[in-house]
Length: 355
Image (cartoon, rainbow, N blue to C red; front, side):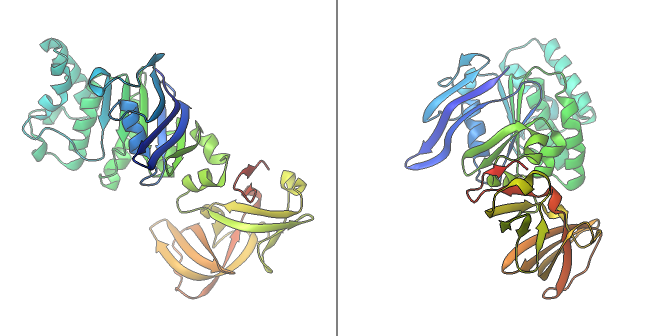
């Protein structure tokens, strides 16, 4: 079951929501749409489902042009971030509802509902109504209704965003197992790079209605095609800093410079942009192996396991993400270190240079 966009765009009036997009999704694994709010993820899903019709281009599914086919004539299931269940029906009836629309025999319905309820640990709650469930149980019910249908295309639009942290972790771990072995195209949207990396599969990085890159998730993280994709795939934000290269040396400011290694040393003299992920900028580490940079602390964000510090160096805001809790006062000057060997290099137009 493969879904393909062929030069698909979508406009409302004079405003472009999706720019011309050509992409072929994979079967049997996660296809992740990663981007900030308003990047176009939900609109792209609606075009996949047939809830919206492209302004131009074609949508193909399993070798068939389905551009003009309405959602009611497609075998599609969609789960939203809100808990969308029928409040007057029991959990059993909610899960069974798409099968009753298909007029399946009662024995088939009972068998399918039992199977998916067991997987999602809903069996003790089948006779309850949604109002009697926790948020996590309600979202499990919505997921069960999507799974029980055996849809060819399953769309999960930030399905875990409204759950508490523990429930999100539990369901995130379960999702790959729930869809294991299914012959369907599965699309999952998220704003969180860490969630994309945990789910694996393939990722489409999205920015303001454009798919900037699509491919294996780990590959896109390690080798973004451009600065925009690197920014989409970084939370906290990646440090994108203008540098100049003269001979073997890259320089950020009068006090911050490093000697180029490997293929970076082969770049010609001139102006570049270096991308340094926050976890490579640390308050701790081996000074002899890192590049020292001092900065005035602007913001500190502390959790039980890490410290995120925003600091100013030479008029540019940097972000550091360090293990452990490091209490810093706003306005004080602190010393950081970063690993230049793991930096990403871009030309002044934002295209990545393979180094």
